[in-house]
Amino acid sequence: MTQKNTGRTYILEPSWKQFFWGYMLSILAIPLFGIGLVALYFVRKNHQQIVYEISDTQIKRVDEKYEHHVDLTDITRVELVKNWMQQKLSIGTLVLYTSASKMMLEGVEEPEKLKELLEQAIQWEIKRQQEQQKTNTLEPDYQPGSMEKMNYLTGLWQQGLISDDDYEKERKHFE
Image: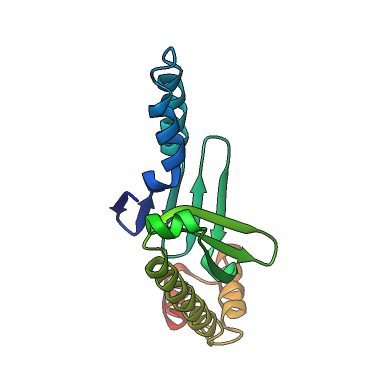
């Protein structure tokens, strides 16, 4: 699996091992009137069009036709699936379940390690969002009713009932 780090986003591509049989059959079919070259082109094209982008808050799977986004906090379960060939090639498929859908990350090298990292990232993101919600429910930065008083003061000033100097002096009490 190719891995690139662009800031806080990791870009992963499936391992060539995921397409092992396609590559093998294409190479074996080359002597048959060049059919293998055409097949090799299509296998390589399918291999290169799948990209996984993993960030702090979401996972995105991009292929030729679709883009599938899943927020980390929406993931309810991460499952590792390996068939006998994937076990021999040390790759696997991670299946990310949400309440509404699932996303498959196919051809992942060291899938056990990535599964563990994803589960940790999910827990951290859930904690971060809970802490953020706690801080958002704190008291406002101003006294209750002070905004109404400021609006009243501004109305008096706009109507010309108080002078500019008096308005500025009173306004400073509200900042």
